[in-house]
Image 1 (cartoon, rainbow, N blue to C red):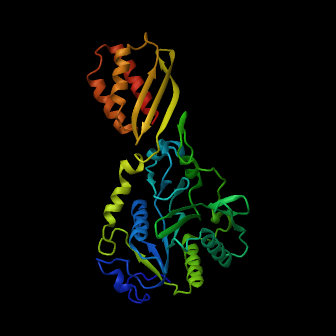
Image 2 (cartoon, rainbow, N blue to C red):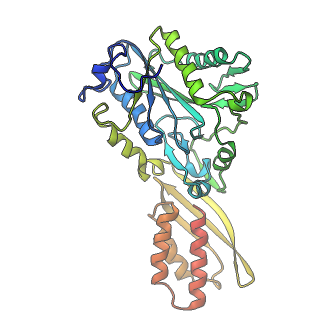
Length: 373
């Protein structure tokens, strides 16, 4: 049962949720089921952080249900250039987010459900949560062949991944979150989770590729709403609490003091890209100019998302060394992203060589370098 307009009848919690200075900190003992009214990934990830940081979970479990508009979410220690196709994402207006938990990269859209299980650190148990989800699916559709694996994934028909797992363990609190594919856009999923970037070396955590399938493909009568209802009912039964889903607004500062600061931090370039572990890229590309083909070798080292070392090798007779050196000098210290490098190279081109031939060559080189990002 979802209470749409009022929290009044939900086991002693309504007065707590309306207290601005307390938020959910002092909620009554027992279990709590929350569902976000937002499809914004940054707001939903911020709510996870807020509950983990502010709520006393010593004698309480919380289930948080949420869905997002199209977005790729990378793990805390991952490299977005290794994990996804940023060009395709930009073309399709798909956001990128970095969560605070570890694990691999996932694609979210409104056909995917996200489940976050909050407990104290002592009671943290991923397998118990996954078995609960399996029980809910079996209760809803007994014919479904769904199992939890030792990697804490859920497999459909023993072959297809329908859920991946990640977690964060704090000093006293913990959360485990997982996805559940109902009717996600698999074509877009496969397009954005395939990196086109070559020659990257990094110690970042790599994702493990897997075959995926939507539950909708197995049973077309299933919907996200049905799945969330079944899982919340199973959760309520398991924890012996009322089946009462509380809708929450993750932008509400009155209920969640400081939440907008957390949301803004998750949206920053410094968090999404700047937290990428140090990496290098060693690659080459061809430039075609007036029916001649030229190979260019590029080596860069990137730390905190900014270029620290840059080397560009190409024949001196094609472009004077001083022009190539000028480009390298200006790239160092810049963010490894197309918008900033475009601004840097545009400024260089405005003050660059007046010779028409050299200007065209330099412009072509700049364009190719930007394409690496």
